[in-house]
Image (cartoon, rainbow, N blue to C red):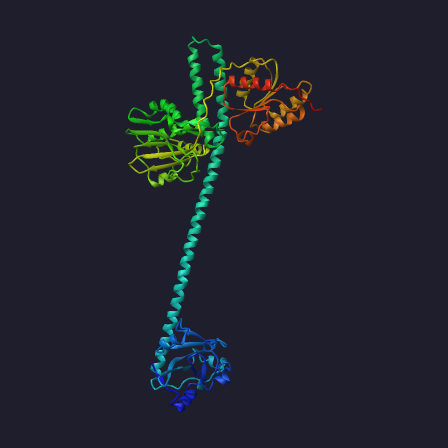
Length: 574
């Protein structure tokens, strides 16, 4: 570092002021103690006593803020920006000044820094303002120019690196946002697809239930006319059994579309598994060993019996299909304590614990990609014609409706295990056996029947007429309403109507009739229950609901009970 002793060389100090018009000296507090000859006329703010950091900004080297840091960089070329005139830059070096062995501050020697000759006049400078040309001049200028360029490049590189880091961070944020957006869009599409499929399934089940209603009803009517010894009776029984199996299929479709009304109760899951076992053994085949663990003391869960049977049946048949060469199928029921570690997502805490239903097989197993889609509707890994892909999606819907959760563990070649958790409840007291009720017929009551399906309408008309009722039937609600208007003097005593009809629904028809005759005993029928009033039990005391298909005896029993309970005089509205 160059050393300069201003205390012993005052004449040399004056010479420095002339040779370097833009020089200045700093004391230990970083205030100006001397200025070059050009400063008074160029910028009066640069004067003795002013603070260096108030006057200048160190553009290079970077992060130099104190006298000590400036001294450490004494060999470096500094680039200073004048704060009062940011377009003026000084380029030079700081020289340490010493006095009697003690620090005497710093001396800046240098001059203006310009890159174009046109900047002389625009900044009020002349060639005399620059330091004298050194004998090493050309080489020194080249080195300084190169040094300045490298420093600028380093500064630019540092800024580019900082910008790159910022861009990389922002890019990752955008990628995460896009990933979340894609997931949400996929969930929305899946939800819309499930809704569309559910509506389709519900519509198909509704139409199919009307057909089953006619098959089941006419089979029941025929059985009432055939003696027990008649060989035709067995054929009719087979027809009715086939209709019952088809009705089970429609219940699965309605369950999938969430239009099947579940009737939950405190259900002994072990007992239900033992009941299903009788049906499962011939279905799984002789090559599969079936093991059942269903202890009596496992406890009860709040669930619908048909739902549990469908869950066990579908999981077992899925396990059978995963073991084409045979294997082992294990179905077990166990109680799980409330404070146990439950390794399943979205499990609602239960003070009484859970009932765990496990279905394990030693089949082919699944990979991760298959497990992610296993509960999607119509997704199947089976060959064409050997599976519709509804079984596990129906199981998933049933478990959710029972306030439970289902998970699957599987590896390729190691089999699969489905685990269902249901909230445990207290066991209800056993109910007394209900006596068999033989339906009582009508006593000449006037019945209004409204059903748009011709097969079902003719069946119910014959059934009710044979039972002793006076039946007036219509296929359209508007026609039925006109009949009610005509019969003001002799109002109908019972209305039996379908729920889903064109032009007007069953509940709407009922409200219109009540405006004329007041509260009329009404039985609603439907193959599906998309109206919230039936799901939530929002019917009046004089109203009932029957889910198609139903047995003729069930309708006759409900009609008689409802009429007997509604023997109250009604006011006819004029």
